[in-house]
Length: 230
Image (cartoon, rainbow, N blue to C red):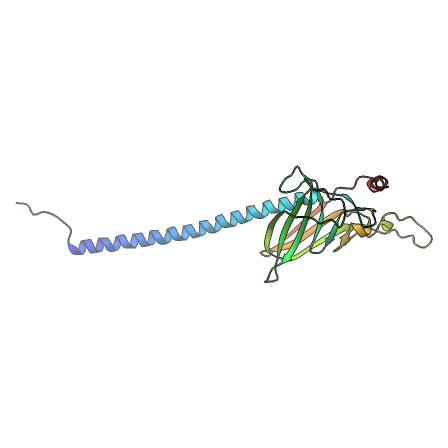
């Protein structure tokens, strides 16, 4: 009668030890792979979101127009108010409804850690048109485009005043004025619409800068508007 073959206790213990070591190595390798994959996927998603938001900001800047409103004296003025922290203007292509014009506000707000977040706000002109410069606006749409940015600043390029734009040579000054960059630009005071807007900021030690030419106002639109008010 043959003796049945089998595993000894020592062989079984050795096999279980080797299997445990293989499972430990496989688990560690999978954890490392998963961590790196999630990190790369998260970085890709963050890059994709950043690119998308940059395109949205660029499109908003390119769609701004020289919209005309009336001030407290019923005088026709271009609607644009900007400082180093942001601006408010009218765009023909809003972010939430591209087929509708809207008053937009793009601004930096400071966080508790002294970084900034870039916020886009929108007041659609579907049911309520902007007529007065001091008109109360309801910014029903708001979205934070970027978090924790540094070195945040808006800049504006244009004529310093209407007199500078309409300058003619005389005996007192033969040097013509030029357009310039500034951190403040209020068309309600200058009576001139800016030519360009630039926003710059830093994210994770990477410098971003967006610059866009604004749509030129329609010639004689202010005079036509003033005639209609009379």
